[in-house]
Image 1 (tube, rainbow, N blue to C red):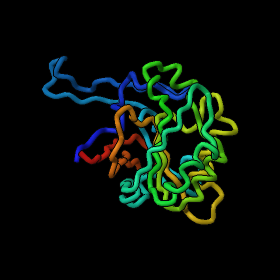
Image 2: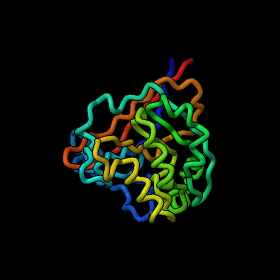
Image 3: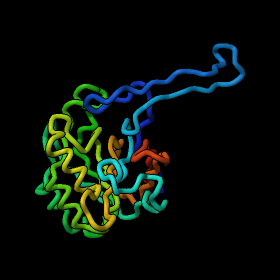
Image 4: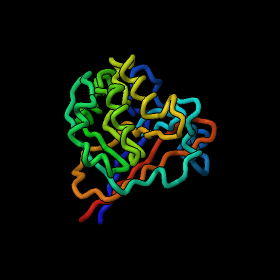
Amino acid sequence: MRRIALSYPLGVDTPRFSENPPVSMWPQFSTDHGDVFNQSFYMAINHCGTHMDGANHFNPEGKQLWENPIDTFVYESVLVADIPKSDDELITKKDLEVFSEALGSCDLIIVRTGFYKYRDDAYRYGQHNPGFTKDAGDFLMEFSSIKAIGMDLPSAAGAQNVNPHGVEFHQSVLGLGRKDDQAILIIEDMKLDEDLTGIERVYALPLLLKGLDSGPCTILAELKD
């Protein structure tokens, strides 16, 4: 077995979605300035870099991440769905239907569009990313085994297609208007540039921020040798 990271480190150079503010970091104490230890502040919105959307992000009745059982963040039946998309294109129900058989038993679907290749172009990555449609979300919600969906995009909403497509996709998979608590958590800005053949298990461990809907996430995958 080998392990790889599926998340990016958070830094001041982290690309941002649409009009989101940048990450800031500044020292409180610094050995460079004569202090005996280093300690710093950082400021970032909770939807920056590799992060997980909790149901409460778009659903007032939905759980914040810290309210979920810990097993919610461990995935043992992972589907990697390669769906190539470029600038401003949409991922629809039709794109996902070809994976119907596998979706019936998976607990995590990772949608790899290939758009991660443009992450170093912060403007293109954050302003022209592909995104999902409502019918894609409604389709995924037909599969009760799915606990989360991950993607190599800064947001499941395309920056140029936030309304209605991006908003309605989030509302759909995060369970807005449902009488039960079914929701599919959303993992955005995943690092998907490595070979994922033989993926066996994924741990997507968010920072559990009491009082907030969502948070940054560290992700690791276990693969067969």
